[in-house]
Image (tube, rainbow, N blue to C red; front, side):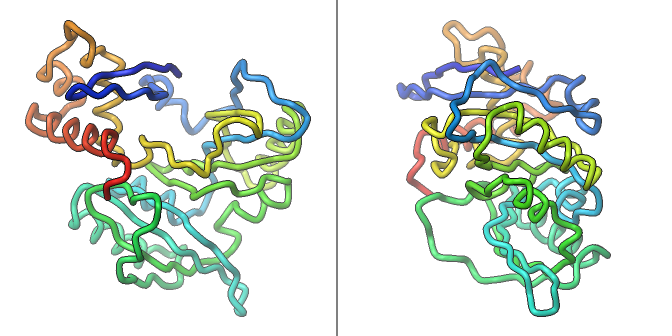
Length: 272
């Protein structure tokens, strides 16, 4: 379910767009088909947000096995015809980062994993409470990037990988009928599962501007989106924190911690 709403947190109103996933959605994720919205696009191209799963991807496997996420910054070919990528792994704790790096190191789908020092602060702060920079080397056939480019989908911003699913912001110089055909070709070539989570005209919001929700860890996003969906921020509140915690399967203390950190990140977008 996709919706828009606004909340007041400590006297500040946040306008946001949220996507609420039902239990059925989660069960059917690995059998997804391309969806669309009622938004129309012109003839000058289309901006899309794609959700992708494909076989033999170390990043998908790592984020499914470990409670952490991954940002893909740059990927390039080496002289040995392998691929080296620069990534930021993020999580709630450093222990989860350690577990993620260990998983990547031991994966048969990677050749090497090198930890980097903290990269200089950029305009967009990293998500998560703890982050780590990585260089990972792997085979090009374990990435879907080249296939997307060969079918006209141009990488438009950093790719986010969470819970065994890649989130690709892309631009394509086509309208909707041609897009469907191109995606079908990619599915056939790679055995990938691809769905469209967002579609807009080029004049719409550029994905180069980070979505504030992308600054949250998966658990913070779960807590915040559930609170919004259940009208926790309405007045009067329609649900209390104990009920929210029970629905998420966490303690009340943990829920409040996730909500406080989510609210702080959303209300202070320029702070790291």
